[in-house]
Image 1 (cartoon, rainbow, N blue to C red):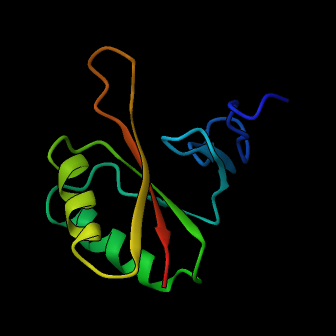
Image 2 (tube, rainbow, N blue to C red):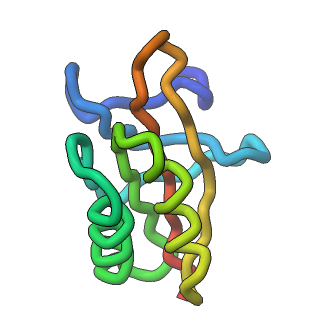
Length: 107
């Protein structure tokens, strides 16, 4: 299987077990957080809470659909020490506001 092809946990789920960062380096996803249907500030707050519970060097996949949160979540995370945003993906389906943000706990 090609490294660029995400491996899904099961059909119909947005959880990707493997992904590539913006530099093309593969990383594994340890946890998934679905915040679809939530509005600001809940996606950012839940992302921080889930991120703090991660083990160091683990990656959290956050999937949401509130347009403002695709900016608020990275801003909230990068404002805290010990976290790094590896990648942000937006849906390429017209009128679909879904986004995926990959957060790595660095310390």
